[in-house]
Image (cartoon, rainbow, N blue to C red; front, top):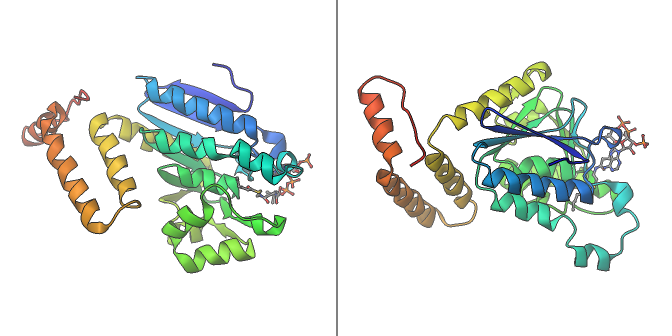
Length: 258
Ligand code: HXC
C-alpha cells in the first residue's frame, strides 16, 4: 500500500516504518495517525512481519503533534474526533514487538509515540521533551502516564512543567531508553535488535510483550501469577521442547512458532 506520510519497507521479517514529513520535522497530523494505524494493522496480519522498527529522520523522530493542524480546533472537534485516540488504540492492539529508533527531536506527541513502542534505542543526538506546556496545553497521548512510569514522578514533573529537553545520556540514565548508540549506528543497531527478536519463537515473543505490559496494569501478586501461568503454558508449545533440546544438544534452536 502506498502511503503519503510514512514509508513502509518489509524485508527479512522486519517492517521498517519511517515517518516522512521532512518539511515539518515529522510532525504528526491526522494523516500520519491514519497511516500509522493502517501500517500496524497490516503488519499484524502479515506473516512476513515478526517485528517492527519505527523511526524518523536524523534531525527528528517527530517534533510533536502538528501544531498547524491543531491550532484552530475547538474542544468539540478534538473531543468528537477523539484526537489521536486511534493511534493509541492501534499500538495497544498491536501484538508484535515495536522498537523505536530515535534520532534528533522526539517532542510532545513524538516523545509519546516513542513511548508507545516496546522499547527505545536512541542515537546520541536524541532529544526528548514534553514541551506542550509552552503551547498552553499538556501531553495528550500518554506523556503524563507512560513517561512517569518510566522515569519517575520528579523527572516527569520537571519535563512536563518546564518543557525542557532531555538528552540521550540523561534518557538512558533515567530508564527512558534501553540503549544509546552513535547516530550513524542507530539503524543498524535497531535492525539487528529486531532481527534478533525475529529469530525467537514468535509465541514466546508475544507472551513476553503481554507479560511485561501486564506489569503496568495490575498488582504485583496478580502480575506474578499471570507470568507464572504463561510460563507454564509455553510448555504446551513445540518451541519450548525444541529450545531446551537444542540447548542440551549444544546446537541452535529451530523455532517453528508452534
Ligand atoms: C507543526 C512543526 C512542528 C510541529 C516543527 N514544525 N515542529 N510544524 N507542528 N510540532 C515545522 C516548523 O514550523 C518549520 O516549518 C519546520 O518544521 C522546521 O522547524 P523549525 O522550528 O524551523 O526548526 P528548528 O529551528 O531546528 O527547531 C526545531 C524544534 C522546533 C525545536 C523541534 O521546531 C519546535 O520547537 N517545534 C515544536 C515542538 C513542540 O512544541 N512539540 C509539541 C507539539 S504539541 P516551516 O514551514 O516554518 O519551515 C503535541 C501534543 C501532543 O505534540 C498531544 C497529542 C494529542
